[in-house]
Amino acid sequence: ISMGNLPLDKKNIVITRAKDKISDVKDLFSKQGAKIFDLPALLIDYPDDLTPLDNSLLDINKFHWIIFSSSNGIKYLEKRLTDKGLSLRNYAGKIKFAVVGKKTSESLNSLGIKADFVPPNFVAESLLENFPFSQTKERILLPRVQSGGRNIIAEKLREMGAIVDEVASYESRCPNTMPKETEKALKDGIIDAIIFSSGKTVFNSAFLLEKYLGHKWLSMIENIHLLTIGPQTSIACNKVFNRVSRQAESYTFEGLLDATINYFS
Image (tube, rainbow, N blue to C red):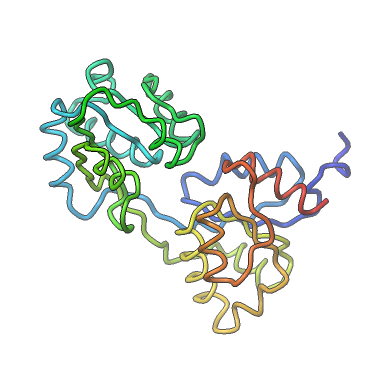
C-alpha cells in the first residue's frame, strides 16, 4: 500500500491509556496511517495498603477459584507473589483461574497459565451466566482495583451461593501531567479524534484537559471526535462530554480501530 492509501492517513489521534499500555495500541493505529499523540490518563500501582492482599495470599490455597477481571489484577497479584518468591504458576492445577476479557486471557497465557474458564463473550454478564459451579459454597478470590464502586461479579456470585473475597490488588490514579506535544496539538486545534478505553480514562482525561487548556476546554475540543471501546466507556463519555461519536462493536482495541476507520471513511 502506498502511504497515501492508509485508512487513517493524515489523522491526528489522541490515545488515552495507562502509560505503560499505550505502545501496543499506538502500533495498531500507526500502521493504518494515523499520527498518534499520547495522553497517559492512568497510573497503575499497588493499592495504598497491601495487608488485605497479603492476608489473602497467605490463605491462597483455601480458594477454589481466582477470577481476574483485568490484566492489572493478574499483573499486580503476580508481582506481589514474586516479591515473596512465588508465582501464580505454583497454583495452576490446584486453584482454578477464570478471566473476563480477551486481554486478561492473554495476560494469563503470558505467565504460562491457561485459564480454566473463559466466558463465551468477554463481558461480566457472560461470565456470570456460564460460570461452572461445581459445589454450592465455592470459595472465590476476586483481585480488583482499590477504588471503584460495587463489583457486579462479586455481588452476583454471592447471590449464587459463592463465598467471595474481594481484595484490592492494584490502584489506578490520575497522572498530573500531559505530554507537551499533546498539549500543543490540542491548543493548535489539529487533533481529529480522542480514543477512550475505559470510564476512568474519560474522567481523568477531562481533568487533564481542563488543567492544561483552561476553563474553555470543552469548547476547545468541540470539533474533536470521541470514540469509545464499549458501553461503560460511552456512559462516562456522555456524562463528561455530552456526546460519543462512535462506539466499538467488539469491545477490544481492534474493535476500536475498526470503529475509527469506519467512522472516518
